[in-house]
Image 1 (cartoon, rainbow, N blue to C red):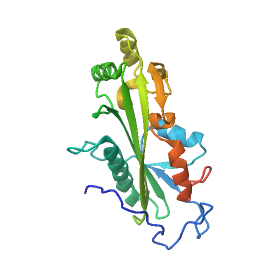
Image 2 (spheres, one colour):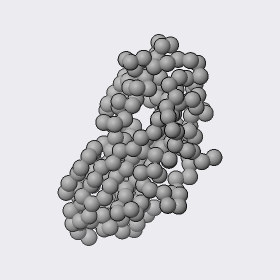
Image 3 (cartoon, helix red, strand yellow):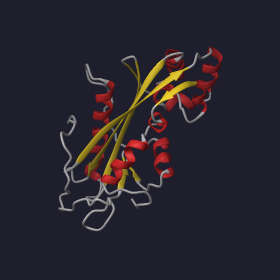
Image 4 (cartoon, rainbow, N blue to C red):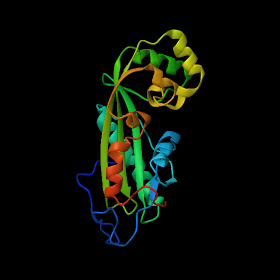
Length: 224
């Protein structure tokens, strides 16, 4: 079943527990976090910011819908991932779904399927500016509350040489990355300018996500 974007947030769980201003819930606890992503980079970002969580990668169809914008696509997929995992989570849990894509002048660039495709993608990004969109969704395991948002960053590449692209792809680094590069690793040397969040380009915009997690009763060092 296709996920639709929620029009508002539900502020109560099925047990009737409501969130207080301090991020806690009136039943006395913090909410366990389940991450519906297999991405080591997202896991590392959450751990570095002090969050504990369990991992339950979602398996969904991630193809774009006809006429769908990049911004809408990442929000839809993030919500669909969270919703796919939520039924198997414990009732008090909150599920985080995330999706990141690179948009080059309206063309969606995902993860390369091969080394040859990675070479082609990097040459397309060379000496041009692209936008990285990350959609993220929080869904209560009860299904009674959901929040969806999106962050974007503008990344400009310098001119890339054929040899450096070939060497970079041969390292294996770009093969599981949206846009075929990792800004926090060797791929960061390709970047001439960045406007916006670097953690968004890495796959999880912590500056935007953390206030939302707090509003949901999820704080650093909470056990999940």
